[in-house]
Image (tube, rainbow, N blue to C red; front, side, top):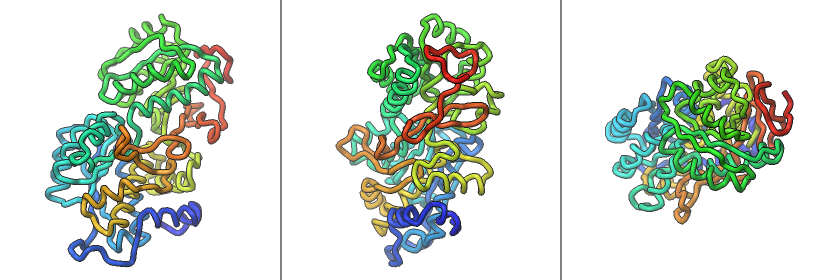
Length: 420
């Protein structure tokens, strides 16, 4: 990218990226010439899918502007999976067998990632998902490493996401608002099964007794019966697990004046368009995310966010940042290996320990049950929780990085009066 980007990011951060990439004036192996092709498979018509493509492109821009990998440029090839596993598999096959990509960055949908995982194994293509959260992705790597080692999960498995929700809920709801009970409301999907199991285990430890569990069909259009059922149990907070839906339950929660705050995970609420999409009904909604505009998790967060806005006209969904880091990690692995040989790249990917946009970027090792997933925690990628407040995404947790108070609309009742 441009020199101004490096200045704002800081010399140390730029040096860290150069070290992570492993750029070298020495040429790569003689047989490896021309650009290094990395395929990006996502839904191009969706904001989240676009953010994945844009993040990958921005990372390639930066790498190429600073010498590439062993003097070779990174070339991003885009494929549209239309949020279809079948289309994603066809795109993956084309990318590997016809276009000869050396790695793939793909999808925020667990079902698609799981459909591609066997193909990553079969075709020996290092593959990383910047947003899918199914525990099965990493379980397969752990249980059959020799076969599935080419797959990486560049976000958190559902069980770890549940722990992050519980960590934040302890502080935000149990401690700050003296809440004691919670209802779980999640879409019925592969990633939410271990998420809900995690909620059931860790919410009580966070100080919130679980009084109800609801798993709804993602095709649900009328949430009235669900809200009525939950209200009858009188929970202090609703902890959500939502990715494929978001607008409909949020609008109905607002319009029906459900007097219980939303916490947990509502992935669509991380998009800046969510306020407009819900006509402001999102006011007060709290969700886990990667970052928000203006929040500097590392020296790279704000500069990369600014580059998104400058080039694409809007701040990205969090997977834009994780896709950016995924391409940086792949390039770093190839640079250290001085090769695009898939086994050599996997070996070096496992050694990744770099400054990313959302924290210190590294993967769990072979002995972990979360093999090849992103490391979570204050020393690694901390994750943050934001709340929609009067049209803006405001960071409310962790307190070490977020100094904003929660604000709820008038129809929300809390056990401790928050600013209204």
